[in-house]
Length: 184
Length: 156
Image 1: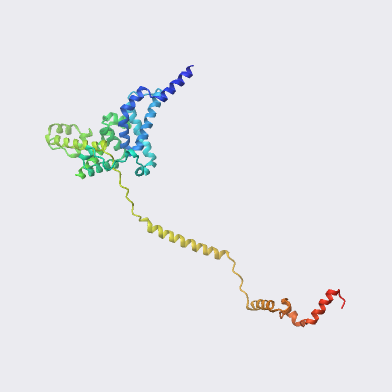
Image 2 (image 1 turned 30 degrees about the vertical axis):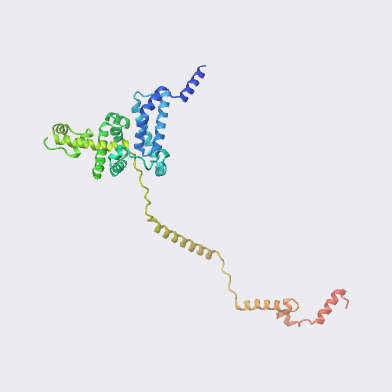
């Protein structure tokens, strides 16, 4: 009887996510997708990584290994998954050839206000500068400024000391600002 | 500390790496505070672009095919080498026929001539061989007699 009950519980958890899972997805899906897109530069890969991260979260919860701080845990797992994807590297070759239909811009699409405010050349320079940053600096900058995580959280997520995070951040800011200065 | 902070120092300050003296100067200097605010705006702009704008796709640039002449040259050289090796091997493994002497050629030609122009179809009969020169060629009558004897079982 106990086994049957457990099987029924498992089936239920497979079919519909528990409220905590639902809350997790609602709270973190957007920011994790943005973070992964930033770190990987590929929307499809970012989507895959985020799915993978939530699967891991589900598995951790099912096994009773739920972390105290879900936000930091999810960020750490996402950053590590992005690193793994980057290391694998094969998908990079297909980046230019793989655009999903919904990611392809319409010709007459009105530019977003942020796009309109900044010149295309400045945007291009910033993106190029960001992509040429070392991987660690990209991660630190993304977590500290884009995700607006405090330095100790960034350090915990990346497995670095706070001092190291600050140094990486300083170097990243210097290079990005130089790119911005060149654009002016 | 009366001197204004450098841009590097301002960036260090934003990265929480500034020394206590630099922080103190920044708190009291209006010019440096203004520059720090300017840096903050730059960072906001960078952050905004990275957060909200779509990453521009790099244009696929066709790389100049500098390797093409080298590849063509190498391919030609490889082909020439292959042909040379083939010829060398062919020469090495093919037996050269022995050179015939003029007398042998003459003998063969005589045989051929005898075969072609013999009346009886027997080259030995027509050829001017040593055996033929000893015995006179059989006449028609002799040949007829020989035929009769063969047909009648030896009775003339």
